Length: 210
Image (cartoon, rainbow, N blue to C red; front, side):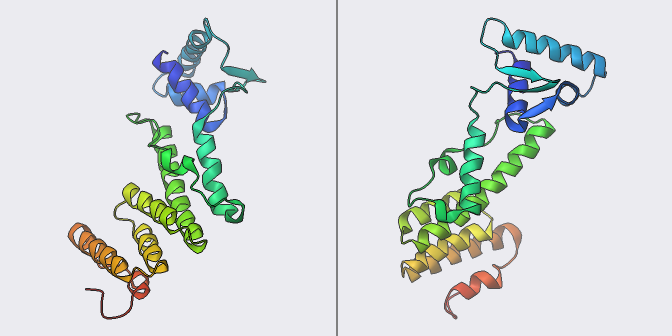
């Protein structure tokens, strides 16, 4: 598929809809509006040539055809379910939260970077919340997997490390909780020159924080 066709599908997949003017101006920001719209028309023609239409136009607004599936939407639904309606979750790990990788690797357009960071933040918050929910239900192995997935995503994120320690404490694995705290303390001292927060320290019995 031509690169411009990929960019059109990616933008509409993320934003769901866009007017021709907005889409053309976003994808071709360094040319005149007339030239940008011309480039958009050419790209849409090439995108539809010899295949079922994947982009529809209704009243001047473009969107993906109804039959096109966007995995980012499945991921976002799973993440928002964890955050907004945890009681509706089963006792298993929503696979979308673990399998969702970085959005459009190698793309550096501003609209991609913004959406990539939004989804990254959404995933981290969902994984932390999921870890708490699963730990409360006694699903400690899956709770730990969710917390460690968040740590892997953001190694300096204290709330993710607190989630790991909380799972260890829920299993009465106090030594593991201490070990993880000490490893995190060493990491942020080396990287940032700061100590863990009082909130993290207070999770553990006194006298074992060094």
